[in-house]
Image (cartoon, rainbow, N blue to C red; front, side, top):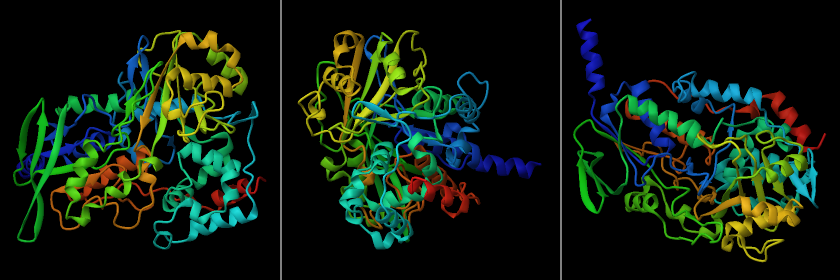
Length: 533
């Protein structure tokens, strides 16, 4: 018994772990450290440059000033790492686990879009994919071709121009935010990863939602669980350098340099200490507008990119951040969050689409020059959101073209102008004087939001544990995890689990990535759908 107690204490006191970045990857890593590596919460420190946790899973605002969501990630039932983590995390009221809450909620409200596309002012229920036999053969070839052969090529390099005029592409690119100039390797991974969802894609079957926005439903319960176990959070603290050393063939981090409140500081690492860094950021340099002001673009890479760039200088095993942060014109788009004190708009959209809020999912306006999409979630969408206040979210992929109803590029539009365009697309232009005064639309320009989709090759993204490093792991959307897909919560959580297990020598693996492409039933249904049968 004494030997067991000594072993337990030895595990618990096995150094400190510093998590750089306060997004879902770091929060998940902290939970895995406690749950699976037997690390004390008091030996875990999360360092975040902003004044709040959550990273890209954010949610803020008020009914008076307007709520803000930069975006939300899709969730589906095969996110095994995500649901495995949140099966250990209670909801805020402690009544069940977060995983149980999500599955219970989605049994009640199942996504079944009756208006996935709007074309010529009419909703399209269950659009045909419209693929030719040549398009399907190219999809099959890309799915089978090894990533090494596809290299840095783009989707446009592999497909005929006519492919990008199909309903399949229109629904695919707006669901996942792909552009023709994005990496065909990432496109291939998505085809394989979500093969089981192709058969219901035109109704968005299988897409799951959280009860509230993902900050309230995922981040807040996870933070509460970590705080209860003594995890430390250093907010408003910007890490400027991860200082490294090499000794007797060992590469390791020995110091963390940071600034807080105008003062410089450093953390000296002791033997046994570890560092997990979230590299890059999809939402770095985001800027908000208002109802009467467009967001002011900020094209400079922010703290997360600057840190990764400094780390990677002279260390090829840390990847190539410039590959992802070097072409903002190909990685930017604009999202917007609209808060309304009147239900006129929500009732009009319900009647137009045939879906109640929370049931329909993404609505894409096929004729929109901005490639505009909106989603009306179940209300309330924020904890504490008053009755009679509604919130919806939307985004545009082609933000530098003039709109159909507003003769300005979306990137230069105020919230009022964006709402005017939305109402025009819905055939509600005549009701602008009624709906606009009850709306607070806050646009958000995100220059790096799809940077993880830019063409890349092997070595551009570093391994979770770079070769030769003893106390360092790299997590987030820009590390390399075979088979899984970036731009998902699952990718960040899988990276966190891999980092903890490998750093601490835990002899188990995260759940394997679901591979429906090897299930004959999945393939049969997908092929029927691709042929519009």
